[in-house]
Image (cartoon, rainbow, N blue to C red; front, side, top):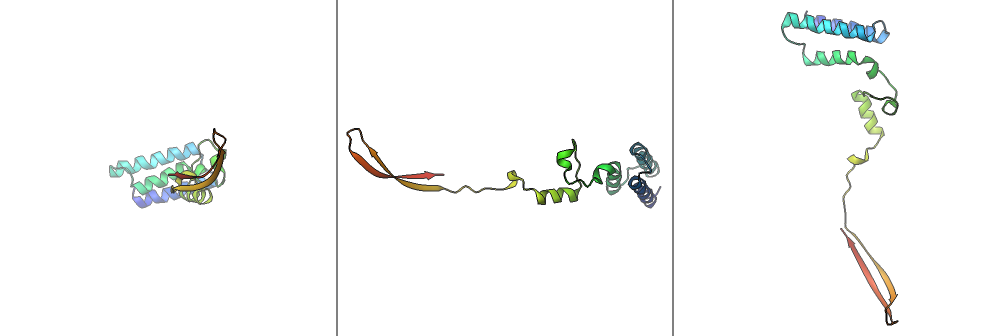
Length: 129
């Protein structure tokens, strides 16, 4: 099985997944057969980019779900790179925003009565760092 033959079979599997012709368990079995046939002929696993495409075929239903609220509505949501980027653009995550601390200064006038009934005025200055 050449790499081109494997790519052609993967295209067929993708078409079957999109049209719903092949169920998920059937797709898993076909993917396992493809990997084993490639391994028998080349004595190594397929290249990483092909394995990534095969993994995407395994997760076709999750990756093709275009629901924009899947993070809130599903137990184990899986986002594509595009969905993840769109979510980060739409929602601001506060723990990623950096706040700089700056010293706060302030003052206020105070007026109070001492124990000997004398009035005292003054200014209190606050420095918080």
